[in-house]
Length: 415
Image (cartoon, rainbow, N blue to C red; front, side, top):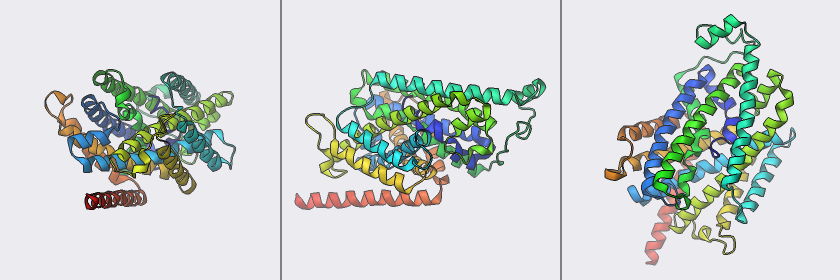
């Protein structure tokens, strides 16, 4: 949950509402279903392959080296974009107006330095960050509930929650647009950015006690908890802000303002900032481990596989990742970073579903129908993302494929 209750829940609502309109909950439900299918596939694979690297390692074992490479490459491009989005979210809640970009850059640079000295999130720190985040989110939900109830009569409130009546105009907010099927699916694809942390534990499989039991349970329980939290927060946003949530980078802070809970605003800003930084630190660590695993197999330049002898950290990989994240912050906006992240992560889980589908016998924990649904869901959601993001993503994947082809040919010529 510490990997999911991070930047996404504090920032994703505006981009999603701009395309899904008043069908936000439908988009959330679709994203949750696809995420559940992907989570079961990851859990099934992780139980049999308790090694670092996540789907990169699983796909290599179950399908072959090329599938593993594509999975690892998609993971890297998706998660690097996630890092940029998390840094932007941190800056939106923590930086003075006009200084968001430099503060986001400084945050990434600082955490890369921290990672280079082997300081990562401990289990205790993760628990503290989750508690702080949940306190902030609970305040937002409570504020949203009071804002709605004070606008309605008792009779109207009964109608509203029974789904019979009450429009956005009766709530005193700017109404959201009517949804289209395409908009709902694109909203689900963007929301997927916020769910993707459920498989973080699988990327560090070698460090988990009793992985066959722990990893599947952790993934499913954490995903369920996150869905509940996201549903409550999403309701607070749409019922309090309506269409006004689209244009703001800090929708949850605006919920408190509209509800008259400005005294609690510092708590929310602290919760958002700490959650974003905590998730960013954990994600940088996970990307570094996947980069290390790929470099050891020469699927990335070999010099990235060097591990610092004193701190046991792939320092070169960490620095390279930090440079790329900073570059994205300088050229992209939050919505673009979220869309690009979803592109890479959805393709990553497409391969995870295919790998899990191939498992049989004692390795099979869930019906194949879930993997089929997950694969179809991933492909469908990827297709709905903005065309520019898809084009850039495809070009980056092609660049990775070209690099691997050249590397294989060079290796064979030397042999």
